[in-house]
Amino acid sequence: MEKQTLVKEICPTTTQGWVKNGALLVDVREKDEVAELAYDVPNIINIPLSEFEERFNEIPKDKEVVMVCRSGGRSLRAAGFLVNHGYTNVVNMEHGMIRWATKGFPIKGDTSSVLGNTQNMGCCDTTSDSSQSCCTPTSEKEKVNTNDSGNCDCNKPNCC
Amino acid sequence: MKKQVKVLGPGCAKCKTTYNNVLEAIKQLGIEADVTKIEDIEEMMKYNVLTTPVLMVDDVIKVKGRVADINEIKQLLTA
Image (tube, rainbow over all chains, first blue to last red; front, side):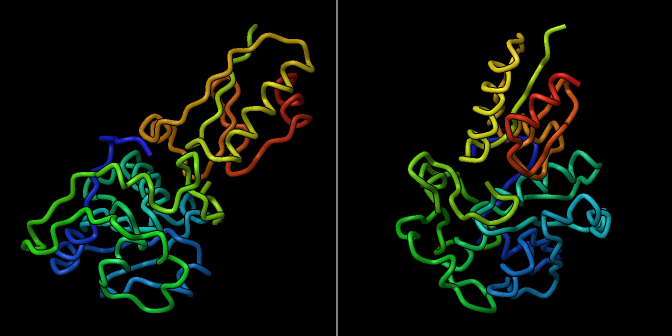
């Protein structure tokens, strides 16, 4: 995943602050993934990437929106799609559920599918004020659940 | 006129297969074409792409979210 500028990216810790301020999380993972393990936050909707083009207008334009997925790749593409469709309050949560669960943030379900290969991935200073924290993408970012060539190997639909 | 072919994808196995299929299709057809592989996520987002791999011919999206096989690509290049 290349560093890009079209979409602002925030880390899971910063996302926690956004959630507290009422931001809407949009989870673009497929339904079976969400059934297995879900973000446990007050404002969240699931629009799988496979349905995103047909359903993206369910996302309000006047709210702050954080796009999320499993590792941050699919949600980044979806966030870019929204920006291209005139959304201005959209950010992407980098590292996705993998980092979210590793951090011990609220979840519902079984973490076995995302935890495992997650050591030494810290990107946020968890000792700082979460509302102020911000990540600088690290070289470790690209190693999350990747195969030898650095590409996602999750084998989920629409996530190559 | 020379076809402009683009394969968009983050460099996954499916994207590589699509790219290789494009090269093979062009070889089998014996035509000339400019083939570009786009792996940069920001560049991809400019095309509003959600699912990859994406195969574009002359700047029109022909296949997205799956691997296009050689015969299919040959048809797209000769259409």
